[in-house]
Image 1 (cartoon, rainbow, N blue to C red):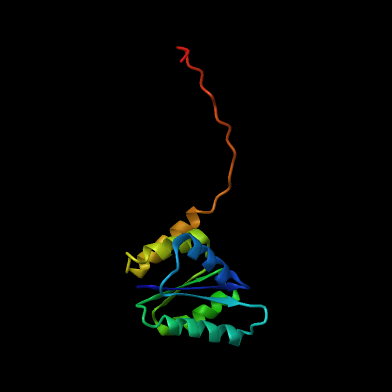
Image 2: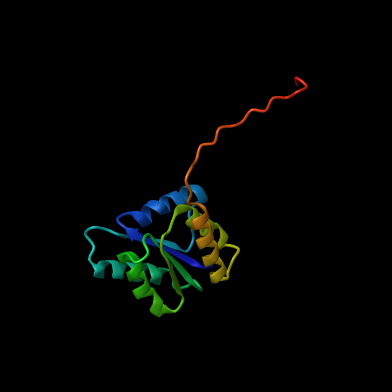
Length: 142
């Protein structure tokens, strides 16, 4: 199976993981790393390496970070890229993580899974606009 690791600022990883577990159930081969205010860069690197080590039996690992270019994203790239089987995605939202969590059981092509994540993530961002319902009058009185 493809392993999942979620990271981000403050309690992003643990917070979004609690939502995933509530909606989709407890996940196998899944870890999170929070970048707490008390953490140094070395602390974050150490925790990401521990999580990646926990997922070492996975053929590939997808890392989901909160902000593209943020410290958790950059650090995940720095510690993950040399391993050769790690892909880092930034801009993570709950719909994309849910889709990947459920789809990875049936999809072993990591590139297809990444494509699904990016597509779902972008499709699920929208602005609600109210539209009044137009009532149509029937000519036959029914």
